[in-house]
Image 1 (cartoon, rainbow, N blue to C red):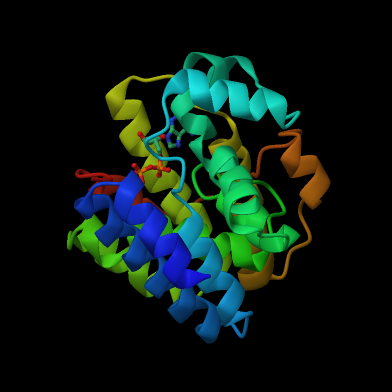
Image 2: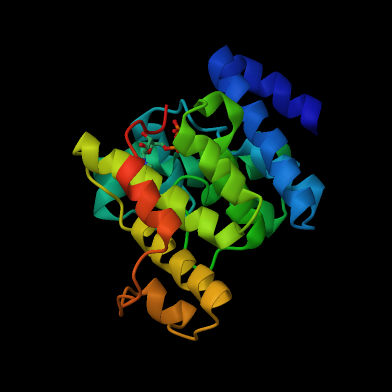
Length: 229
Ligand SMILES: Nc1ncnc2c1ncn2[C@@H]1O[C@H](COP(=O)(O)OP(=O)(O)O)[C@@H](O)[C@H]1O
């Protein structure tokens, strides 16, 4: 299947994007190995995460509608956000992908999702942190954390993306915030042993944590300057 996907990508994405895609495939594999996940699934999700990256907005909207995906007002206004969901559809229709976990990992790579699977977590991290994203101190630190604590890395990487989005003054899809809160709760739970919030409650943004951010997060918040490329 890999050769088939690569041939399709060569016709449908520019070379620079292909480099990013191969970086995501590689980093997904490395993280999957590190966290004892299914390496083959990680490679497939990484390789196929951006299949619909260059689809036109009207095509993204139509394909998502045809698949019965609920299109919220922010995706309606910014259809590019649907490229993650639509990439999963292309993986199914074009390459016969049937694995639900792989398709979810593709669909979650841009916005994340509260309670997403560890496989989704590694593809989400790889999309933001693979080597061609740059070598800034923030990115290097996030790469380190991604090998130390999966949920802390999701939390900090979501914050990194959100900070960029705030600076860009674009519409922000709240799922990244929900993802960040979910991951924050899990990493605090792991490190401090406190049972603060249920995954479900966080997913609905019902409660805000009273905990202060960790030193690392404060440092990250202060030093973020250059964001995603
Ligand atoms: N929560 C969000 N709200 C609005 N836009 C977002 C959000 N998360 C990511 N984006 C934007 O969506 C686009 C696609 O993100 P991503 O899949 O990470 O693409 P890329 O690989 O091009 O960075 C980017 O322009 C990114 O800034």
